[in-house]
Image (cartoon, rainbow, N blue to C red):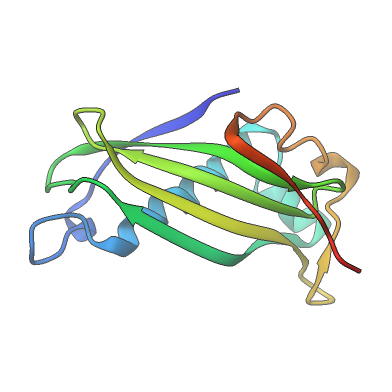
Length: 147
């Protein structure tokens, strides 16, 4: 399943150079992840119910083309890695400018944390299917967990 969200950019997304500030790209990618989870019937309400949350270990961004003040953007999400029990995941986001040109690629490596124990955890059964129907990248890999 392809998942993409279109956004109208905001004045606060831009810097004095009149292009989108670097952290705004990552904020839109985070918003897409949260919307994807909700779309898969695992919203903030479920995160609270099971007392878990997503955390990031790594986040890298490659910038390709500027996005200018007033442009609308589209941001997609593809799974590029997943462990057997879905406790670790890698997601790639592509950010497109209003003309549909690739503007940035954001890669994140994350996991689930038990918010009470403050330790990594395996997601509950209700969340096991979150990434099954997600579009995968061409270089998708199984993440090996070392005990």
